[in-house]
Image 1 (spheres, rainbow, N blue to C red):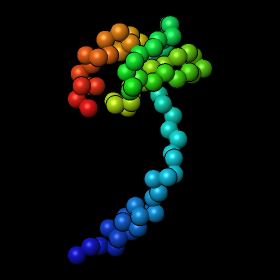
Image 2 (image 1 turned 45 degrees about the horizontal axis):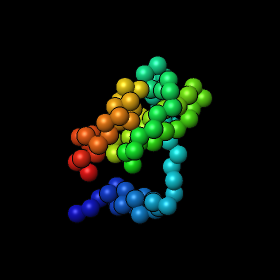
Image 3 (image 1 turned 90 degrees about the horizontal axis):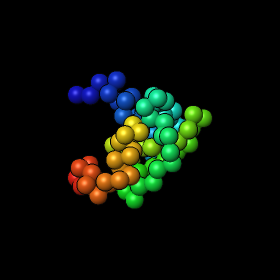
Length: 87
């Protein structure tokens, strides 16, 4: 009982290839996300990247930019992170 619209949606999904990478601009608030100092964390899900304004931290598990205070916590007490423990 599929309609023509459902059929065209499936065709569109079948054409999608996971190999194609879609670039996405990451948005954040400079005042709360830019790090004052270079931080390092032993957490494998912690990622630093450089922007025009400075360094920004990102959590791979949450797939989002961290605030500077969250990044400091991740740097210091990463072993007790509740999100890391769940994965």
